[in-house]
Image (cartoon, rainbow, N blue to C red; front, side):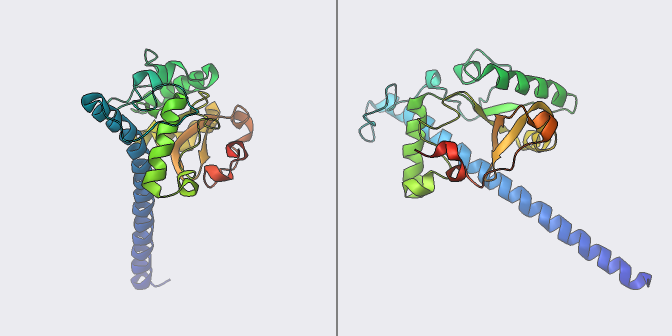
Length: 222
């Protein structure tokens, strides 16, 4: 092949790969920001209500707990204070399913050899916190149907049962995407690259196919 034509083609391919990589990173950052905004919104409203003594509206009638002002006892993790998977003093980590927590800790120990530290953006949540996040999502996205693509109800949420974690930062997500299945840790939803659940069979069979979003998950159906 004529070298005068092969080099420009290689440069074009490299540019295309670079553009694709940048686009993928942008999607991950955007999706991560969506998840963070919902948790931050609940925590922010909680702080404002504690300061003013006022609420934005009546709490749901069928959920017990501190719906109006979710607190650390509800599993709130505040931005900038994300715990590791070993920080079991807080309920967000301590109330996770023991098998899930064990898998996370084993993975975190191995990832540390690569210079990574697992951080949990959201772990166990009370039904009250989950309800608040759902209500915030409805306001943010404009409808229950659209909110359901991002936030489950208290009755169906894997966070409320302690069976899911939202992980970070981005290098951790990349590591889990490559090696998580070795520990039974699988990304559940294609639109939530931070959301991981335990699938023990993944150790030998690989992770199951992801749902596009929670609305496709049979467990999320009422």
